Image 1: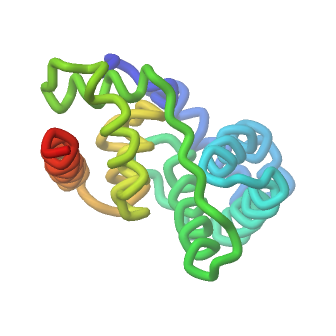
Image 2 (image 1 turned 30 degrees about the horizontal axis):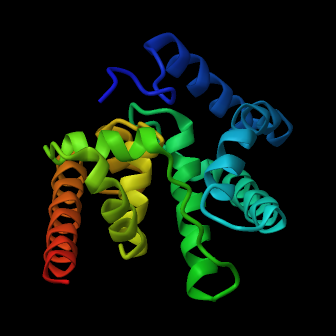
Length: 196
């Protein structure tokens, strides 16, 4: 795993963000600073999981509306404000899936697959790739979301835990269970191909 995520903030950035949040709590017009800072990230997060740009725009708007209306509830927990926004986006997205309003899309590139294979400690990468991609398509939404956040978005476990409202350690345990599940799915698939 890379040492730092593009979502990582240093102490000064976090302090400045807390100031912006407190200002927006007092004056809703100042929420625009947070909106402008995070709109594109949240939109990309949603669009990466959807097949429709319009749906991504709609859900992104809903996320920021809910964030603005509930900003008074926000409490700083040592991670970027984006974690709170991603939690809202995650919940909105799952609600849309439950209501069958949108179709889930999975965007996987070779780099992500190689990193997952490396994490799973498998050597035969080329033979493993198509099997891993097929197995990923069979994951449940919560498991897939965990894989996307860790491998596709390079989020640290602390932030993943914050988004999912679990501990950092629990996020690690869940991810490694998902990787074990993927490994098992691939082993079964490989065995069935070898019998043919």
